[in-house]
Image (cartoon, rainbow, N blue to C red; front, side):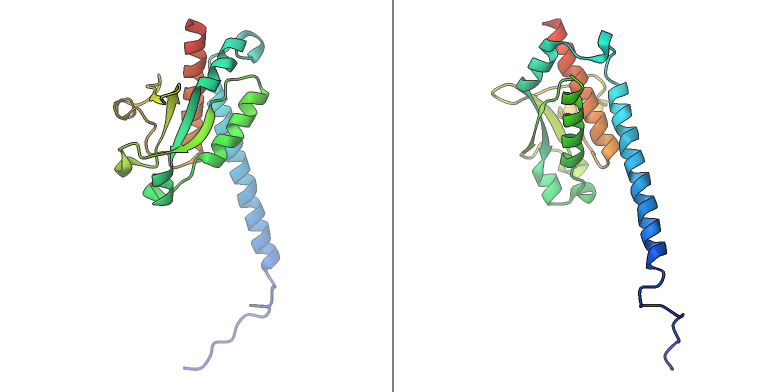
Length: 172
């Protein structure tokens, strides 16, 4: 049992450039995926002339919040994906583009831990959960977006929520 010779440069930093290049490629792919998810979220929003939501819809967004279940995140349910960072980026982009952007906050358990991580759209002073067009039957039953395990899932929930806010505001 003699020690195995290591390839030249092993452990001395040689080859770290290749690893760095691979990391850079992964980062570029991740950024491209995030941009694609953002585009998909915007694509599911209804078209309005001028590509901007009405002032009423933007104002109505203040009555709404998207709540991310902090229990799911802390207990690493379903891998422990935390949607908050991508939701924050999406909300900033939506607000800058004139689209409704609900408040973002962490909230308490939604009663669907086995299906988490979860988040929901709530409205008003009493944070009444909203059922949103585009939710699955199971999501509508729980009044929550369930199994949010990727940026694409979070973008979908944000896009559907923004569309719901716009529809509600336009209907008066």
